Length: 508
Image (tube, rainbow, N blue to C red; front, side, top):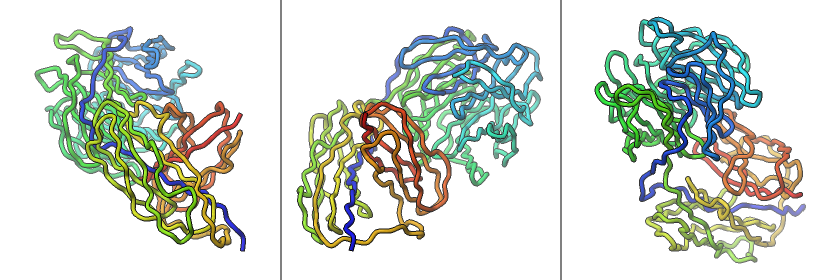
């Protein structure tokens, strides 16, 4: 019999369920051109604010890292848009759709212009089938969906799908409730269209599933409003500002698609409508708009959640040497290194084994030993036991991993490929590891699901997206040829409800 030396990862996953403190707002560098109803989108870590009344050809780039603005290539003159256009990003190119071209009624357009930030240039693309302004936009699996809006004479329920790969449009199932001056956000491959106006203020939440081409009505928003804005942090949609028919709002309401419920958050400092909200690096930037009294603004306010810091500080069991066919209780000690109390889940995974425990009210600078269900050592081998912590808004991702080697001896097992479909989700350790410059990555999907496979550095910045699409059930093997600098990196898979992390080392 051949002996197989296997590395099996034990992962302690900390996912925050509650954080005691509310989010905070901070004033940032104002946009150079004050304007209302521009379009806003993130690409390559920078925010592009395009068009709008007061700057119909303007294209200004905000860098959140340096808190600075730069003027980029303007929209081509004949394709200026005063307000109500929308934008989406695919493959780090920005697509700018529709809008209102002039001061007179009925000047809604169906333009589609592509902006390439790397080349700082514009290209005209296939026009939309239906002209619209004040629509919602969402990007799923590389396709852009322009939803609803106003045609210049009527409120729309249209869903127009744009495929940038073929530069073509497809009409999809219409939205149940027509509306304009709406906002949209994407969570887990579904688009949520929120609020708006169709003769009266709306508080509707309509969920669109592009895969099924179907709509579902969800729990209504607490405050009916239009010309509002929204984006996503940690799977929740933050909806800010807007106009309720009589007042400009500072409202910040949070929709959780997982529970179909609403909560309130810290209000925005500046009351305004006709703004954009764009997420970058886990923070939302509310930019531009109209103030009470009608003046345009370039206000730029950053919303962020409190950052906690939890780490597994020791692996206490099993011991370094174990006996096969014996049961051991994995134990890890968790410490709250942050400044806010945390309630979190802690999960331990060993191949097909999984045990999840819950820590409630872990106070700052306190520790807790987590004991999991028993694990039986299956075979002889070298077990690389690792503990990872995963924490939304983690203030220090460098302390998120801990490893040790465990040795066990028993008769080995023949190994070989299998054509059977996997019974469970899994992400194997990459091989070779350490490596330079090529490594192989294997993962398993027991059912068809949208898969995101990404690489992060030790400070939590994404350095590569290897997979971002729907995939059928099966075993997958891909190669990653990297040009990034040597060091420690983390490979993360998200497949439906499943997520897992593996540590990778790139040698010099």
